[in-house]
Image (cartoon, rainbow, N blue to C red; front, side):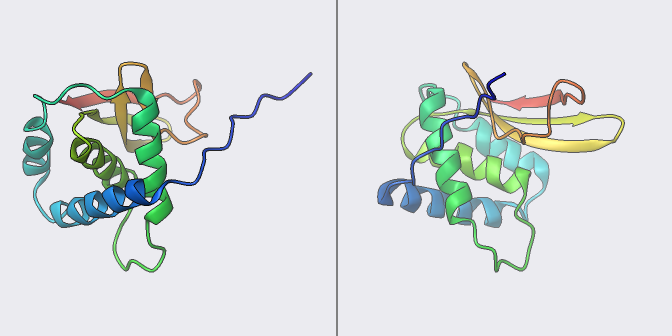
Length: 138
């Protein structure tokens, strides 16, 4: 039996990394705001045309690529997914920001939704422990 592995993503280009850096900085600054304000920020982007999955995956890869390991605060799924949504907006498109939860074991997760499917789910988030979408913005 042959094991299927996803194709490795190319290293993000310099413009993708620049957009990702600006979006991550804004995401980390917005992280100090209450959640309702971050949700309002993403809702303000709803008039932009919808981005395709390929663009969102490239920008998510760029955000993960430039995420500093030395940062003293939290940079996890919430901050990365928000940065991906903001980076997508900086390119003139929009993607939905999804927040969800699961039971047994209890956990919360944030990811980016596209019409073609979610972006930002970890490999361990298989069908045996799915997340239930609690909120999707916009």
